[in-house]
Image 1 (tube, rainbow, N blue to C red):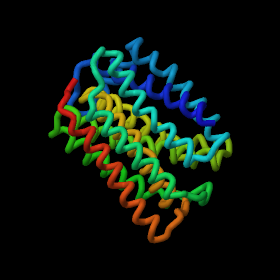
Image 2 (cartoon, helix red, strand yellow):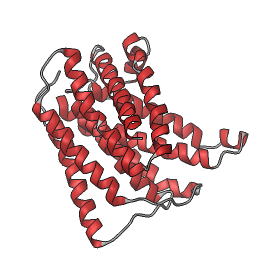
Image 3 (cartoon, helix red, strand yellow):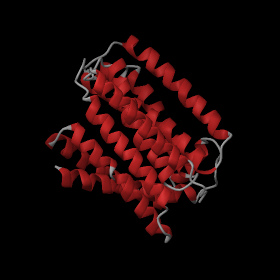
Length: 275
């Protein structure tokens, strides 16, 4: 199971490196602009990145079928190290020590968070009302993130946009889970969930690719990779009524893990490199 998860992590790392390189070849946008996606869909380099990305999805599914989430996801997060190394090899430069430190701190925090959270399944089909607060809150957070990112430069902008895209991707995954749990043919197609999913996926992709244009790969990719699973746990609790193993020791541990994750993103965002 672990070798399969590592293979999936490598595929995602390679895909991210290819997508970032393709995004950096396009005119730089300070804020998400749909024109970037229109340019990227005509890029062979960007399109080629979806080959390892698809392979990574397939391998991750297999790994999750063979092993627990608490083991597979931390192993998957090791792809951050691989992505930093792949990026350095592509542009033929030395790996920045700060990038490796940021990734190491973030992965350690994420691994601890997932193990300590020990999320347990809730309802399979939440009511529409359960989505109101999470969707509204996420929209406000993403909008605020974009507005603040507009005032930043370099890796800091990339990290903030990466966090916003990580939140969007976690929402998309949650909607997929909701749709899959209540599939009833045509009734599912005309549901509000599929149009909402399409919009969120496009927004997340646009935010993600714009983030790749700013700073080294470690900044936006660490922000996306670390934000997504944490946001997913929050959505799982608030929407799907999933439960966490709660006791004083775990709560303290979760707080420390959360601070560690934030520190990892902060280290990545503090990179002085813009290229």
